Image (cartoon, rainbow over all chains, first blue to last red):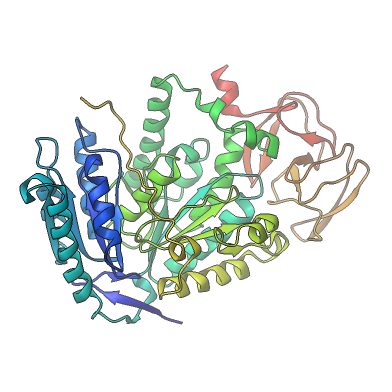
Length: 385
Length: 95
């Protein structure tokens, strides 16, 4: 079994060959979407941030946008933004250019207005997409895979079934020399000691404990009763009795390999193995964190049948709910049989691993097929000015 | 689905129902190659927990081989284990 991927100049592998149109700030979202929709294989990334940012968010937002642009699934990037003191599209483009991929900038005011800018933007991405269409998929080692693991809608069954399936597949990616990781810091509260105990050294262990403690403190400072929100009303109805039980189920998605790195939001883990990205539990913001971390494929267990994907990283959605799987064929990609997961998780993980390889090599998951990929968000932590 | 319930780790003192189970249901649970017999003292809803051993008030509830909380009252084998008779240690520490 092998991976068929797109080679990139920086040595990474794309599982897709999209041209990304990244909006530098929230107010350039519309032209970014208009530009991307006019040319095939172009996708926009829009968000609601980057205006009036103060530290530490300014740094976080810029590095996130830069590292999204560097994601190997993008063959080229156009950064669209206004000309104003709060927007630095050039800073984003220059950062992305370090990857060696074609990058350009389109500034609404400098171009002479919206329509002129959109028209020029379309021509830029048309040329980029034309060039990118000449790049062919080629056989690559599985070590080029970086799997992001996401979960939403915890139930007592999602831990040992769908999350364990994802974790087992992640173990297999890592056994093949690849890398991958999970995120959603608040979901780890109550089980951080278990993850931290898997750290490769004390520095990584302390960092893991620190990001969880930091998140807990921020929640508390906001007056949020973290133990009231987790488990929430639905969790309790489903049978989850404590935050520890919920978190212990959630961390099954991280598999069983040693924790090699803990990175901040928008940062890229450097090495191989299993990593953790500090993100919120908000799935849109978490998916962005995984994509910025360089994940070229994402698996997502969702007992609530979350409908969305991500613009340029294929998202494989997994459920243990047979009723959802037959009712929502345009949302869900893989059904985990509960009995089989309980008796043969390695077999289930292998099947999911095979699907990951297939999707990484070109098979489209539902959200990508129907283009349900426009809902994106970025995480910020402090007020804006 | 045919498996009625499961004990996820050998250290666990609770099992998880994999379907809605009636009170009086007799379960043969595989734990570390041994069969553990538990008769449910109450109906247990799909995904909910039941005790597989006597758990004294104040002692720990273990699932996934890890502590998920402690009993707030004595729990007999086969009884439903949830927020009415257990509390998370984090939640307890906060009170």
